[in-house]
Image (tube, rainbow, N blue to C red; front, side):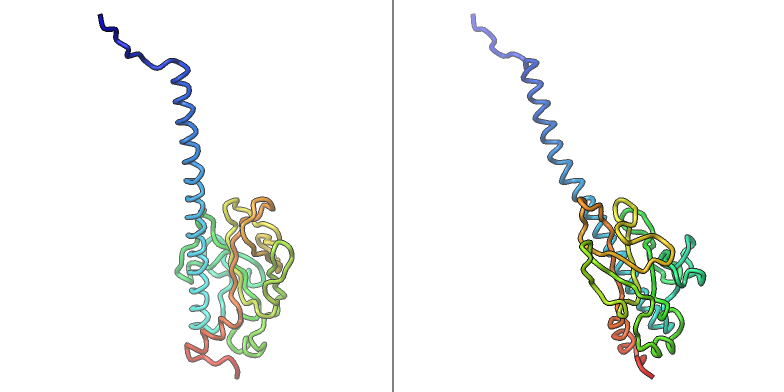
Length: 207
């Protein structure tokens, strides 16, 4: 008689199969979460750049920058010397970063008044803004910073010196660093960027 040598999996073999599947699933989940976060970062960078371009366009048309906005997205004169949200209604851009948080916005007081005031101040900032790295290295001198835009990143909190609201003038821009709990994304508009756009549009930068 020929014996049937076929048999089912033992409990030990089944346990090994489950263990291997779990390892494979775990190795796939980590890259997936990383890819998703990277997509959020890319979306945020795109939103920041679009907001920057819209602000420069607004300055070309109006000869000044808008004040920050409250939650309604409209430029608010009570926030002209404070940080707030981007005025997405006036700018006609999206308000959110990749994580669904509204982009923050701060503008130097010289550049919110009018073209004459900007020229009178020789296109130099007077609010004393600073932008530094986590280790306190300066990225731009205070007189060249016109406006600052930033996302609070994945954790939804303003990290380091990027305090939300109020009259904060000190900001931090650096690579995302989980060890130092920093994941904000920040860009700024310099006076040379504004001067270039004004000249290209036919505006003069001096009287």
